[in-house]
Image 1 (spheres, rainbow, N blue to C red):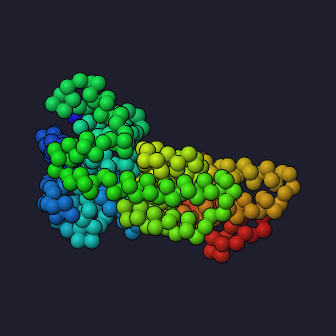
Image 2 (image 1 turned 30 degrees about the vertical axis):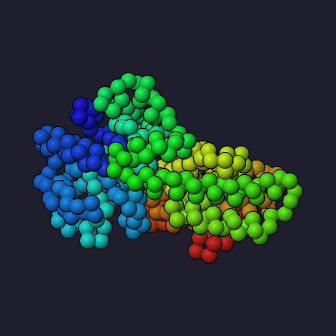
Image 3 (image 1 turned 180 degrees about the horizontal axis):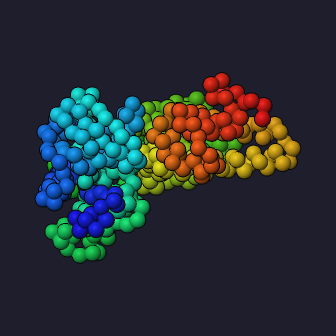
Length: 378
């Protein structure tokens, strides 16, 4: 609260492990704001998580992807108008969205969030409340949500010493004994037989299927239909937990085959981290924007080199690839919105036609007609 009063324009969030802790922290924060006179009149709103009191000035977190609104699971904003049936929110990226709560009720207060829910969040400052349920993966996510600074808090009732805290936050959960997890799960009221093991087992079996194929290829042996059938079944089992995990893992395994062999042996820590690395850009348009800009600049340089060397065919091919990238923005309005504010990094140093949008402007800049998807002979 002191930091907020000193720097009211800085975005911040509190991160912790359980929904109960999040609810308590959100209520404590609202109480401070209410006493400071910084919230409007409360309106009782029926959300997916139950009734919540929202007021103009409240921080809001969106809990479900909704393409029509241009929001993602974990998007943050500030309520500008609140009614029992409708809400208007100014998102942190500057856009305003308004929606009927009967159509979209997946919102909650955005002062505090679970670490899991905050995987795609980026704020200026973060406060992390460490609890015994955290591990290395959760600690990484929680301690990397900030741009400028993060503070780690813990209670002596949970960790008597800094050493205990360090051990908990350094723990590779994939290597824990089942009994160790069961003890924690019992304290939290979680059924340990179902909570972690099935997904980890699915990751391991998928890695085993991939590893067998890699070994056959390394030895110059054919990949048989039996190999492919085992891989298909492993993909199907893993997709039941996370439909995007198979693609993310196989991309990581192709880049580093040792990762597949390691996960196949039951050491899935690095594989789980690889999934997180791939998932973050999907959840965070700022990361996607940075990657888009880096790739665009790389292709631009390659295209320029090809043209100077007189290789017009390669130059044309690169331009068409850039055109495909530009056209892809039509399917990602959130990314397009972020890139519009970073247009100079993409080489657009003129006032573009707002009705055209950044995607069509980029396509035009490389001589691609996105309406027909063909090169214009430049």
